Image (tube, rainbow, N blue to C red; front, side, top):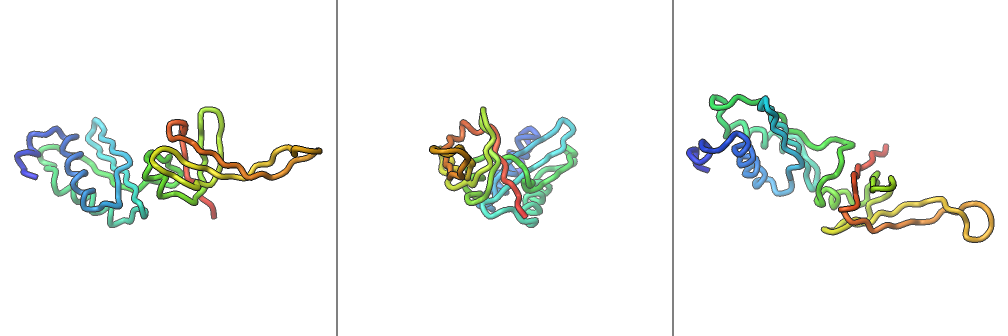
Length: 162
């Protein structure tokens, strides 16, 4: 990218452009969040189809640091991977977490279930539940499955099991 082209951009445009170019070199890594505060603190949050390693964060940080002139605009920079307990935001994140347990909030309920399938339109969740027996007294364990469109998911978080 020509230095003259970058010079005529706003600070936010410069960061976005440099970040997009850096991520083109790492196709398995993707942007989850970019925050630029009024005090010019740049916070980049990354995820990856196979996770994010430290070198990914270093490379993205260097790309931003080396291509934006601090003489023109001083800024602080933080590049990190999504943390444990962060909500899933993109279909790509659901797809990479197939087979893991999620806590999913819909408008009316909270479901803890295994993510069995994720495509571009919906997820399929599977879990065991205790329900009253159809005949007689007591409860029985039944396998439940739910096809849930992304639009119905208010929040989904991967649970960590040890």
